[in-house]
Image (cartoon, rainbow, N blue to C red):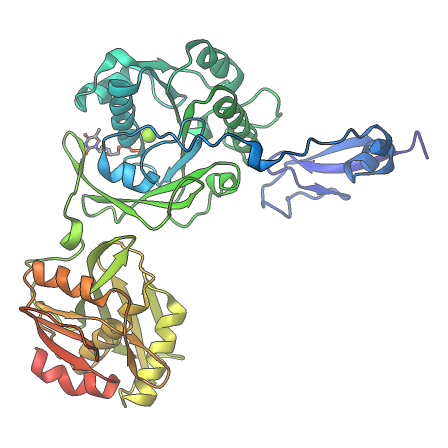
Length: 458
Ligand code: TYD
Ligand code: MG
């Protein structure tokens, strides 16, 4: 078979391989990116783990874990407590962190503040930017009141050159702003493409592990996740954090979706001010309008993220369907769950939603995934349908089953205590033994109970 060759077509954007040429890559959808490559049969065999290599395999080392010295994880505390909370107590030296978010949300701002904090306490920090010039970066750092002495700037898009410079300085932290702007000369594709992003990230991974440097990669994503670049890095990096919010308000939420060195439940809450991000230490009520007017379909509930309770506002708009099937739309809340709850309401509580469109929204751009919100969603829908306002000092909690029964939620006591602290005076909650001091507790056994209460909680 030796000497035989085969033509294959490789996409320059995503590395997918095809046996036939086509104008558009079937994997990533890019146009005109398929290039022909000729491969020898042996090469194809060896790519498939073929026989050619079998003979020369040397044995991998087998390690006895009991004999490995245990030195625990050392962490670099940033002293920005909301950031430390999300990272699980601080950045681990030698780890690779991906910070992703939409353009303009504040990624460069938060990494600048982080660089400053680490620079002050742990030595040199390198800020590598392929996007902004030294004077732009300096202007931001000055505006944020950073100490410039410890932050070294590299303006370079070639990864190999940048890494050579970084290795010579041995910093505590490296910030790469952004991974889309750099390229490795080992890959023949333009910067920002999937191949380049992945190849560059692997280079920084090696840098982090070999030199025990913490590296933060900044990655842009679009709102609908169209540019999947940073997503494809999630398995390469140790920690993935997202910076997110609705653009309309000044609060930003930092959320870890993967963390090899800590929990992924905790949220960090920041407020964007004229001089950078400020931590929000008591974030319980930042996601609701405290001075808001009473409107129909608006209900306040409480979720637990990690160890902290947050109040959230659920809004529903129910209108008669004018054409075709009734629509259900949801932002911030699971659409399937909304459909289930609408059916349960119709069947068990005689709230007729059969020819009604439902639009559901979690105020403040918060994405929630907590069964304890079911009752609040049901009440918001009913409130909008019946045109009955709900008191804004009433907290609504409870999970709803298919029979319309209202079940207990986890950490009910803690959630009620938060509402008490924030000046609420009434709570609709599942039937339980919980004791509260100031709150008037209205126990709800099922959805019919809830509908019966609506007039009293206006
Ligand atoms: P930036 O960090 O550049 O966003 P990203 O790197 O994610 O694209 O900043 C985004 C916005 O934040 C920008 O429009 C200006 C604003 N901003 C402030 O409001 N206060 C500040 O102190 C700074 C530095 C920026
Ligand atoms: Mg930026």
